[in-house]
Image (cartoon, rainbow, N blue to C red):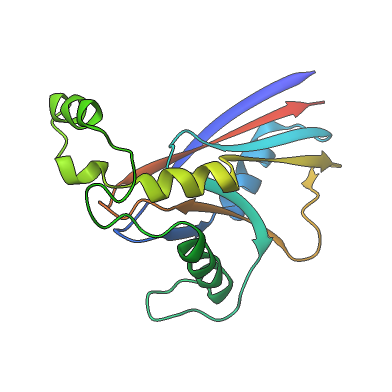
Length: 164
């Protein structure tokens, strides 16, 4: 049994951002040399998710695939974007003070919606590896989603492959 770990980064915007990371994950799998086992794609960020979905050929004005935009709009109805202090219980005054101690702007804490969306959709996906290939199905793609709308930043994706 062998294990392999890789990381790569993507840049998010100040809006829900989706990256098709299938090619980067396939590259990590190839570098692992593992032919049969399990592959985990994981986000260490609590406002992000890893999704498996089919690619949508069409995109909106921002370049977001239409299926992902439909997801954003469905989540907006379930968990409205945090626009004002007090809209959600989080962040409380202790959280805001702790953020200031890390030189973060107070408004950066107005991302409760992103945390809740991440909790619902999950921060990882596990994919069986058979004969050196991910078993995503005919249309399956791996997406990294960042739901944080308060600032753009670099995000790290972790890939762990375990097997033989």
